[in-house]
Length: 392
Image 1 (cartoon, rainbow, N blue to C red):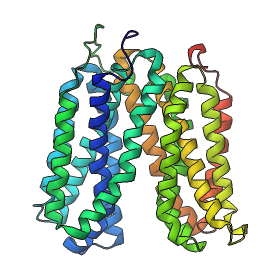
Image 2 (tube, rainbow, N blue to C red; image 1 turned 90 degrees about the vertical axis):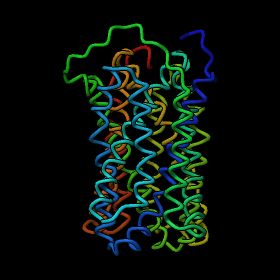
Image 3 (cartoon, one colour; image 1 turned 90 degrees about the horizontal axis):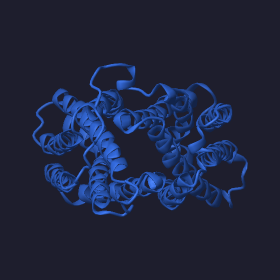
Image 4 (spheres, helix red, strand yellow; image 1 turned 60 degrees about the vertical axis):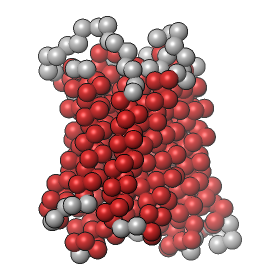
């Protein structure tokens, strides 16, 4: 792998496949509340249930997908997951009842979870090992760009087309991504694949403490992305809530490739400390936001978004590389699954506990106060760990 260039044909193909996967995912997200309300007269509680089913099934399936990726050929797992993901978009258009729709959302979440783990595992095979962090950073840009474009594309389609046309259009996008993914030439694994089931078939034991740290760090991310519009409304900057995500995406996009290069130069420890410190600082800043004069609140608000994007853009390739380097290539599927699962669990806990904190512990400000505390705990835990020499 050392003689393979980072920006090779297979890298571009798997990154493009990842882009279309997330583009179709993000394009649908803002439309579902409108669709469920119009089609099934669903209230807020039902809509929340339907949306959570997707994330739960995504999280549950990932460890099993990691085991499959390490036990059999990775190509068929990737293509079948991606193809299933694409087909379900068209199934939405002909869904007769809410219960069938919920079942489809569960299956859709499972296929998305498997496709993301598969793509994340495969990309580490086509990246030179000495540029692993940089490659993961650039690969993550596909998610960032799709996060910017997807919701805008979906909302534009909502204003001009019926839901049937939208679902079929998203099917076409995802099928295009499947076709691109199918062209990736996955290097042959020369090791003997161990198929005996054990705990390490699903989880990397040495990665458990890093998983806890990542979960705590991403609680703030999940709470922010879910409740920032409410926060903005309460602080008289509601017209900027959409720009918050744009500024965050810019920070993510700028920091990921830079952080990836630093990872490859042996700066993982410093990057994680930097990312956790930024997350903690932004949480504290938003926690005290109401004390700022109205005239500078827009500047502080958007600056917080940009800085938060930098923080999590740094953490993403750092944590991803940590999990991959904790094990050998034979267990890379399990390592990638553990990274994504920790990421999603943190975000999910942030979504769930954010609402509870806002209701029972002092309103929306408490979300960020608690987030700052969790980031501080995460940072303290990380400082007690001595990373292996190759990751320092």
